[in-house]
Image (cartoon, rainbow, N blue to C red; front, side, top):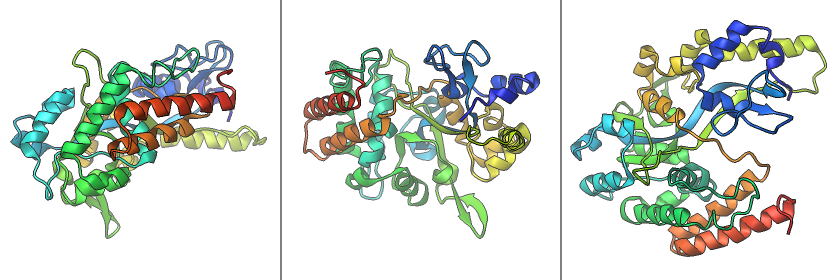
Length: 360
């Protein structure tokens, strides 16, 4: 792809509008400086149009880990949507679970537990929220990081939550399975770490999007704090529209830019929401008319303000799969939490040696 600010810098009012309405955490994921190798906010300092800092895509879709919950059941347990919107602790959630857990009809908590989801979709946000990370950002060595005390604590918490309050079949769930179990079947009171998706609240019927059976009772908040003194750091997802560099026709590139600009525009935002999209613009997420369609957008927007992006390395998904498979074995009782992390540390280290990221 080539820098999209090749055109954007010629339209300062458009650039200003985008920078003011798309949160820096979201826009920053698509900013990169070719010279310093810095990324944008929140982890880096690269700026659009400064040095070799460029915007490489226009974010049209936002996504982030958030806390889906049934407001009626949370209130029954003595808490409230307002409390979960601002963020409760994991101890608070265990207490709520204790008061509403009634299997097999109602499970207090759910997780997207499939090995290909459990790491980036659940565990990584827990780890970041506990002040940990997978590897040393300078040396890439996972020793002392992936097997740290912070990582062990969140792995033990996840195992405890799964054993006490989650359906055992959730070990095979993707996010769409979790959405069906909560929005369609009403079997879950909450899922504390889940990517934003309208599948919890909307379904298509007779070519129209309507509420799922439990959709009007479902909202989101900030995922639980592991340590009350440390801020939650939910994992970010989302999509951006870029322009491929191998196309030589400048008119075609210009048309692609104009299309991307329209997709993320304010005028298109409500149409995008009606089609169950999750716009990147804060004004669209908090638009009162859009909130009537997707009430969970309020929690979604709050979570975007504190999110952190995935590790920007080519080995990311292979690393994610290694940790995810070991976490699944841990939840199933095949590995202890400590064994899970020791095995993951060795395998991620070996992966980085194999790719040349770490010199053995």
